Structure formats: structure tokens, C-alpha cells
Image 1 (cartoon, rainbow, N blue to C red):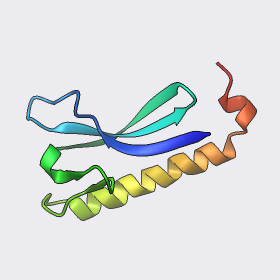
Image 2: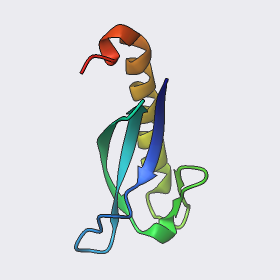
Image 3: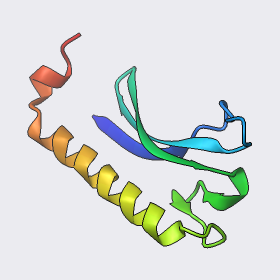
Amino acid sequence: MVHVRIILDARRPKVDGTYPLYIRVTEIKKVLHLPTGFSLLKAQWDAEASRVLNSHPNAGRINASITKRYFEAQKAIIIIPPEIRAVD
């Protein structure tokens, strides 16, 4: 089974103090991080809801963009047959 999540990578801060936002795709023990191109402060990210808080000036635009990319990733997973996904 493949899991798709939107995460704020708090392990790697950028020079300006923000953290990159990724779409994480996991199948069994294989992990793929797809960059979204956005970086946020920890205080601007709601990890439980996987959304940018309204305290960020572009929260609506960023949430729409990451939601679109999230569903594109899910669509790609559905299209790829399971026997191809599991190949090393």
C-alpha cells in the first residue's frame, strides 16, 4: 500500500529559518520526497491538518497548490500498476 503525506521537513532549516515543504510518498520501506517549492516557519504549519495556517500571507495560494500536487501524486499512483511500483 502506498501512503502520500504532505510534510514540513523540520530536520533541514534553510538559512532564513524556514523549512521546506514536501510531499512524501511511501511504499513498504521506500520513501520519495517530492519538493513543493515552498518553505515555511514551523509556526505557520498545521501538521495535524497538513495545511498552511492563515497567519501566512499566501496561505490560500499555497494550500491550493499543495492540494493540487497531492492529488496529482495520488492519481499517478493509481495509474501505475502495482507490479511496476514494487520493482527495485
